[in-house]
Image 1 (cartoon, rainbow, N blue to C red):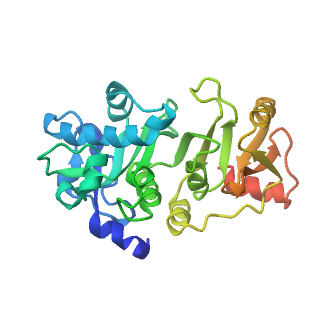
Image 2: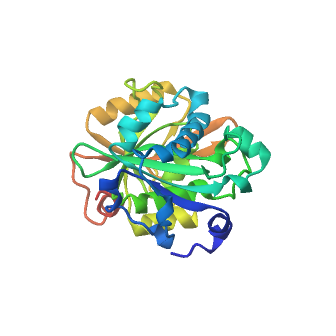
Length: 294
């Protein structure tokens, strides 16, 4: 894959993997052609790796803490490291500016790698999909601390490293992550209103991931939204709940492009398809379903 526009990341950052030893051999050690050095393949059960793992927790807390979604250490270990794996990029501590070290609370005297981004995914019960546990970049909390594009490249290379074919994720309708995820392809909505989550205005969705999807993500072009036939107001709880009711009644709904922002309004382009009725062969509905239903 052509990564010429990510040269600044590849020259300043090192890829890393965190996984238990029985899991390590199942991972792609050179996702998108980015080779992970053997020294950067870390076992979360090795005591010596503790300081680096603590820094990955700090990065996650800085990203998700402001919306009260930070994870405690036990959840990171029990739910992510014991069941899944982590891919990300890191910089040697000695190359970081003092303000970045301070932001990440890098201990005085620490001279190892410092995580700049991470993608964590865990297998789901039916083993056909993986759930995104976390996705974050230092640039979300300290703009300019690392080269632009780190978030995007981490997601693309992370799905390749962890061999993700079907990715399930949750995100808030107003989150910038939603637009990033749409670069992979249409997002099939599983929930539009999620009271089981701490933030009910959360959507659950899945997306099929392959080399073509990763190329779209890396190149930043997306797939466009010519299929949109309705929009969701990302600030309207009433619209979210109404859409949830339609989904529970059997309607298939897809997010088919990044949110469109006009002033104070955020509109999410959607495509609906009545699952119970077969689309007419050759119709726009038929073309869409055949291409993205999987």
